[in-house]
Image (cartoon, rainbow, N blue to C red; front, top):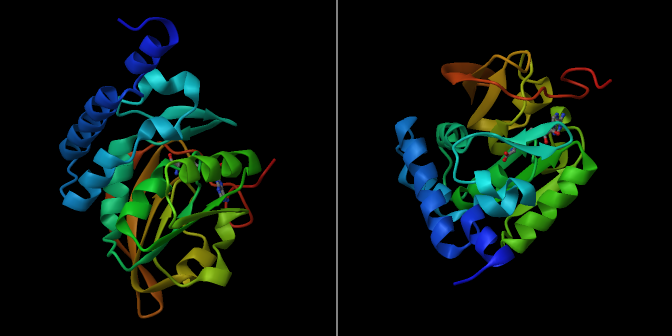
Length: 230
Ligand code: SAH
C-alpha cells in the first residue's frame, strides 16, 4: 500500500481513477443544471480540472463549486461554465474570445469546442500560470494575452463567440463591436455579487439580448469599460 504524499495525491484527485470519478461528478452536476450538448459534456469529462487549480485546493476538484485561485479571484463552478459555453453554440471552426482567464480551466474547455481560443487576463501572474497550465495539458489552440479584456482584442477580431468570466453593468462596447454577425456573447450582467448571466447575439450590427441563462455571483470586471481599478 502506498503511503505519505503519493497516497495523499490520489485522495486529492490526481490519480487516474480519482480524475475519472471527479470528472464524472462534474458531468453529472452539469447535466443536473441543464447542460445537454454532448460536446460540452465530453469536454468537462476530458479536461483535468486538477491541472487548473492551485495545488492546495486539489481536494476540491471533484466539487461543483468555485475554487479560490489567489489574487482575490476564483475559478468558476464547472456546471455554470458548462451552461455558459453551451450557450455560445460554438462550431468546430469557430474562433472564440474569453475575457478573464484565471488559471485557464474554461479556456481549456473552449479549446475542445472551437478552432482557436484567445483569452485575455488582466493580472499578469494569473496569465502566466494559465499559459503554463495550458501548455502542460498540451492545449495548442489557446493563447493567453495579458491585458484589459474590456477593450476586447481588436487585432484578432471578429470572434464567432465571446464569453466574459467577470461581471459588469453592461456589455463593454468594444466586445459588442468585435462579435461576428450571428455570433453569441455570454456575460454576467450586474455589479459582481448578484449577477444575471445573459446571452446576446450580434444581429444587423446590433447586440440583441436573447435570454437570461441563470443567476450567479461573479468577480467584478475591472478595466477601461468596466469597474474602475482602485
Ligand atoms: N475563466 C476562469 C474564471 C476566472 S475568474 C475559469 O476558467 O475559471 C475571472 C477573471 O477575470 C479573474 O482572473 C480576473 O483577474 C479577470 N478579469 C477581471 N477583469 C478583467 C479584465 N478587464 N480583463 C481581463 N481579465 C479580467
